[in-house]
Length: 262
Length: 244
Image (cartoon, rainbow over all chains, first blue to last red):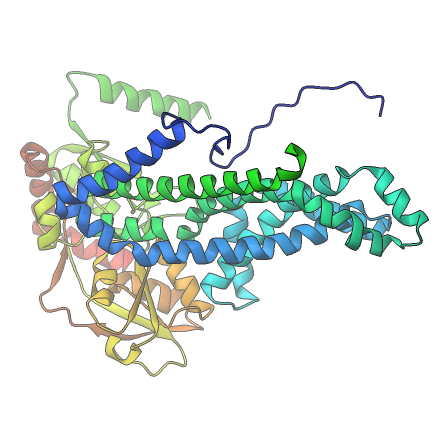
């Protein structure tokens, strides 16, 4: 505990999470939100062809994007919990397996992983495209999530474990009844960030011919040659989704910090 | 390596020199469409279209430079003048004619339906409720979309669609017949077969696409294409690449 304090620079890959205490209307978040909504309403009204047609073309893609995101994050949380526990395990073998998984996943670009799981392993395991996409995304994000869980669990003071063990709980019970319930509060906000990052990364599954927002946009553009208009709308749709989600996460963080503020 | 550097310098010199002996025309091509245009094992872009344009260049006096470009966005690149023309098995269609100009036709194709060896489907109508793949923005993909009840699935490259058909994720693939033959008769001959040739109404012709108003470039290309056809060179190329 005598290590010197080092200033940590935290750079997330998710959208900027608005500060809960920032109540002013003139913040980057509000400007971006109103700008995105205004353009998404104004452009289709001003020039229905092609803007309105684009908006009519992509909704099923939005559903697919959310499907992939929600299924992937759920699976990634499960993988992440197991990996996080594995990385903290005193069993050398389990520890090695979990660490190996994290190292391998972090060393391979997501795009390559997607191709690998979809096309390379596709010859041996025949699963539908959406399932393959979800497995690939969850496999990758599970490793990142594992690190989140590991950090969250480690953030709980070791005194808690010692107290719990001295009260007669075994290690498994200590983890399940004492550590994890408290660690959740630290873990949830970064999980929210990962959720947004994952949602944005699902645009990569469009290369697997999964009909998400981006692929629907590309299909529209390839048929109409309206590249500028199509990709403008696609970018705005993604922006609107991540802005709304980041606000929701900010609210969630605010609620979770309730105890600390009291 | 030195050769490559030299070649690059020469190319640069040729591009920059104001009094070039012959015009250089930069063609974009999506080299994932064997046997028309593809990358061979020496990493060179080769194929029927490439040989055809090289021959046309010799006849009409222009120097073709081929730029391997991803299909998705190949037309956007033309519009933003990243290259002068596209020779990438682009079928001449009414929709495309609105956005760009086309040369003389240089090859006639039809759309072929490829299915697994065990399949009994003979047409797209037999595949209602199933997924059928095609390359994004191709006439093959549009043909799938035109049939109600068939789920059209768009791929970045036709090869990826063939692989998905090979492992059974989709029921069929639609693409130009020379490409279909290349995959179904050659690469995947144990697993895939051509079920039928789809009647899409009128004949489909490949043309070289240029930006609207590029009359000079177009005239050169047209001159070359006509000369190649008049000399019968295209028949030799067909024999070489397509085998008929």
